[in-house]
Image 1 (tube, helix red, strand yellow):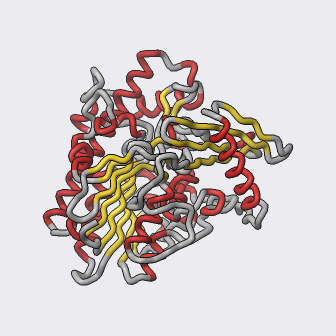
Image 2: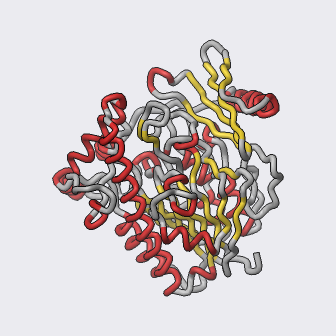
Length: 420
C-alpha cells in the first residue's frame, strides 16, 4: 500500500456466493459494479467464510476469531469486535443492517457508537407494534440496500471532518426469500413472482427440497441472481457517494459476504450447517487508497478481515486471521466450522482447504467419534486432525448457557427469513 487509509469501510452481503458473480466467472453479468471494483482492488479467488451461516460467520468476520470463541452457546457475542478495537483507537464507529441474529439482542452493538439493526428495540412499544403491523402488511422482512445506504450515509455526514471512522454495512437482499424489487423482478425470470409466492417457494425448498422441480430450481436461481444485480447496483451507488464526499481515497474498502447459498447441489437449499463450497466460498475484494489491481489465488479466510483492519491501524490483536496484505504461502490452509442444528446439536463439522484441495470431518461431542470424508490427500487430513484437536481444547473451556430470551419481533423476522 502506498497510502495509509484514514477510514475503514466494510461492506458485507448476506448469503452471497462467489461463483454467482461475473468477476468470479459466472455466465451472467450479475455484478458489473464489483467487476469494476475488481480492476482496482485485490480480489481473492479462493476466499472462505469461517462458517456457513450468519450466527457463526458474522461473529468470525467482525472479531477475527473462530466461532467457537467469538460467540457463546447462545450465539451471543463473547469477544471484542473490530468495532471495539477501533473505537478505543479514536474512530467513530457505526453499523447498519437488519439481520436479527447479529442484532443488539445478541450483543453485537458493543463497540459501535451508532448501531442500526432495523428492529426498533428499545423504542416506544406503540412504535414497535406499528412497525410490526406495517412490515407484516407489506411482507417486509429486512431493510433493502437502498435503506441501508441512506441510513449509513446520513451517519457519515454527521461525523466530524477530522474524525476517522469505521463503517460496517451488511446487506440482506441476497438472502432468501428472493424478492428482487421493481425492474429486477423480471431481469432473468420470465414473469414477476409475488412476494408471498417467493416466500412460499423458498420455505418449501428449505423444508422439502426433494419437492422442488427443475423449473422451480431455475426460478429460485433467476430470482437470486436478480437480487445480486440489485444489490450490486446499490453498492455502486454507495461507492459513488463515497467518491462524491472524497472519502473513498481516504479509506480501506473491504467487500465480502458472510456465507453463500445452496441450490440443491448437495440435496439442500439455503445455508444449513454444512461446509460445502456453495455455502462457504465467498467473494473478497480489498481496495486500499489509490487502488491495487491484483488477483490472489492462495486461500484466504474471512477471519483475515479483522486482522487486516487491525494491522492498518497498528493494533496487534491475538486473533486467528492474518492481514490480507501479507504474502501468503502458496500452500496456505484455512479452516471452517459449524455447529449442528436442533437434533444434531451434538455434532461439530469442520473443513480444511488449500488451493485445489479440501477435507471434511464431523465430530460427535457425545461419543467423541470423528469421521473424515472427501479428503484430498493425507497431509490435508493430518492438518485438519490437528486443527480439530486444537478446537476441542478450546471447547473444553468455560461456556455460557443461552437464557432463551429473544424479542418477539426478532422471532417474526427469523421465521420469515427461513431461520425457524
